[in-house]
Image (cartoon, rainbow, N blue to C red; front, side, top):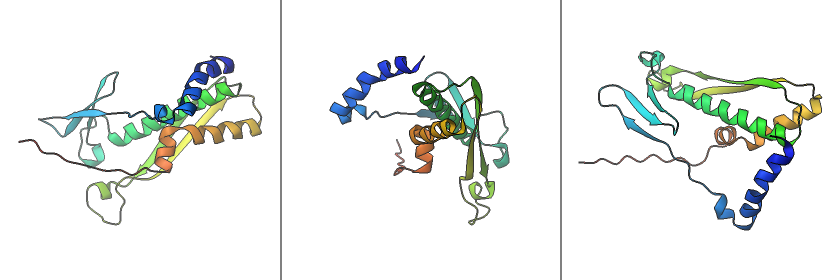
Length: 170
């Protein structure tokens, strides 16, 4: 896909969203089933079923997906797609590349061993390695726009209000 094809694809959507801002609001959903026999949750991804379980650092077997890994995978996927879309819109000469994310967790927090240790990531690092002849100023623009428009990146950087509800069924 080139820049013109992307613009033609997105132009009617942008026009609609300008005219009707509510039309741009979409509620994404995720659903999982609690495993009856193991400490696991089966998550419906829309494409496959992923079974998430305890990370080995918390006593898990290491045979199931870790939710922390899944968070990083979502960041990599979103950032990669966003970078590709931005590169296409800019007619940026991108021959290929990789995107990776890594995050530091202190499992003392998750296991309740230390109140001083955070529950969650201490830091997350997102990195692109691009095969491109583009000059530094164009790479800087690509970086800035990727950061600005990546949904997962922006959600992590500027967390929205979050609410947890538990409903018990008899």
